[in-house]
Length: 471
Ligand code: ASP
Ligand code: MG
Image 1 (tube, rainbow, N blue to C red):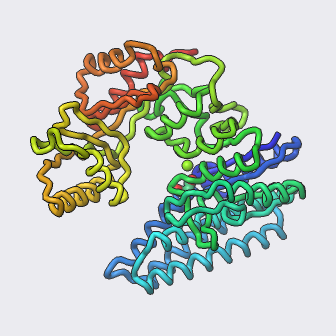
Image 2 (cartoon, rainbow, N blue to C red; image 1 turned 60 degrees about the vertical axis):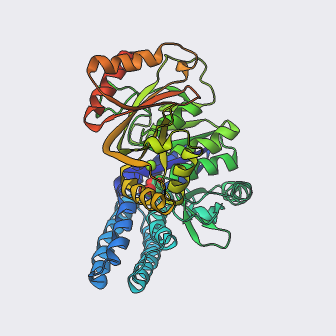
Image 3 (cartoon, helix red, strand yellow; image 1 turned 180 degrees about the vertical axis):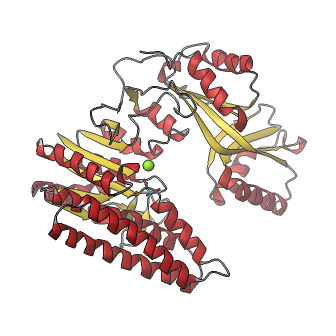
């Protein structure tokens, strides 16, 4: 079997977990599988890299001290992981040297930022890339120490070429596929078990880019599609995609099989285990994606395929995306005006604000949409500024503490009465609905509630559609 196995976050959080990941990959290799491993940074590292780079450009920062403290911290963490994950003196020595090289590169980059006093998206990408550039050699070292030839390479070295949209770069698919196939097939043919950095890629001329936060799932899928593997495994620390967040609903269960489209909706609406873009490259070639637990490898996980053999139930899962805000643009001046939506969304797009959900009343007296809470200030500022510049007198209101509840399932398609059940349930619970949207795909009904009602809404819907019951 040909496999791409991606480990991220908790499954590579320390030396012990990295060794566990290495054993898993080696086990598949020894069974005769052709395996490419994709890894993300050790848990929390990407956040720390972003944090330090921002601290360095603060007005009264003491860059020397900040950098030296940070370098101590990050070096200790990675060297410690090397010692725990690698039980072979020579390999340990080699790996420590590779890690040291990456650390030197990071220190130079941080120093550069401190000198310049500014942080472009391009520099941000360079800094963030070190998370994966530090974890990949350790995982490759652990595999070698277990007796299987391995090597580590960045996503760019593996052949992932992107445009120059730093921090959200998009791969040039044709070229990427060709290069990835050439380069990784060669390594596999040599009997190697390569470890590729997720998330990290590069422009045509080699400038470092990243694929967006959480993007190593996407890297795995791009590589899996290029190699036309049999399955892409996303290894995490839960048994699969669940019917709801178990923290909100303790009776939540692992979903056995789900379609690409359902999984995409779930990922998009806050099921944290999968990056929303992961499915796209796999779906194009019909490659199954499996989400499974690195710490419970006997569990089959959730299998994501084109069309599950039978559609189980009407609704598959309920998610709540927290940390969102609703903005409403309205007022009498808007009625009958053409191009309201176009104007509003153009302004937001120019400000780089992602809109997560939209609803417009048919009187056109207002238009409401959801953005990430982190984007709220940017969105409001952009709208106020542009409206003033264009002499537009539409009113802008917002509600900063909303949550989007999404009810997802292919079985909803063409089944009448699902919306009635969803909103009837909310009515019985006395939960007020702030905004509603249903995608025309009919795969999901989503609506916004006050954040304080989110858990109650998830639990009530989970019960209404019988998701916790054994099945
Ligand atoms: N390390 C990157 C991040 O934290 C990519 C990933 O984890 O998938 O966003
Ligand atoms: Mg992730």
